[in-house]
Length: 339
Ligand code: KG4
Ligand code: ZN
Image (cartoon, rainbow, N blue to C red):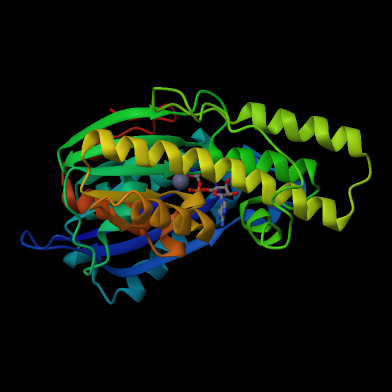
């Protein structure tokens, strides 16, 4: 089956065409076009929902057109239109959902509504080399979410825990703001962290020893805030030192909880997903801890362009779960969670 997928949950406008036959254990990405309005938000230090929605509106049709053209598909070849239903910013979501509904009505194709969070997990199912064994433990780390999810099979997901306040990406971004770094600060902090001294600050590792699989990052942000107030003017060395120590705290917590969950659930695979999954240090640390713990677990992560928001991952989830709906049955739902 061939699917046109649309993703507009936040500041990326993306469309992709993917295909899969029933015997395949992965999805083939025929095109994946992403237009980001990030440049506007980096100036304002965060996403202004209204600006994001207006930019979505500008790009949605050209991006869809380009995705179909790049995939060398004809409209007649498409079996369905997948679209991100939520969670996300309502203004942004509505652009994608209403575009999908209009095309569904015009082209007489069903819609497959997709939960954005499941999409991030399914970014791991586009590489034919990935032989993902179940149960798989997914660590979803993005700007809005930090969740551990047990994927027992394609049809059986169990949410194990998540953040009680800030998400991991949000911690990177908010701390980046304290350090005067451009939004989103994840990639900048990752780079600066290579140069800093990891013993310069001892920031907290919130909830690292808790019995559950929950996370909390707001205390870390508060600790950095207190430190920056104490220091006053931040020079380049201090910014690099803080970046190194902040990243160390965030990654230590993420890795410790992920390995603990993998052991307890007897997971055969660990899957990474979401924007923070682009972080090389996080990938290296998980790999190292799997090795040190002598666990027989395969580790998978998407290529970087598929970690941050994109439509290919939405198409991937839809291809494994082709639950087709009429255009009149589909609505944007900004509050959608794991359900
Ligand atoms: O998945 P995503 O594109 O959007 C959401 O669904 O939230 O994730 C964006 C988040 C931002 O918070 C950004 O700072 C973070 O991912 N991020 C990173 C890296 N690249 C993006 N965090 C740490 N290291 C990176 N290399
Ligand atoms: Zn996302």
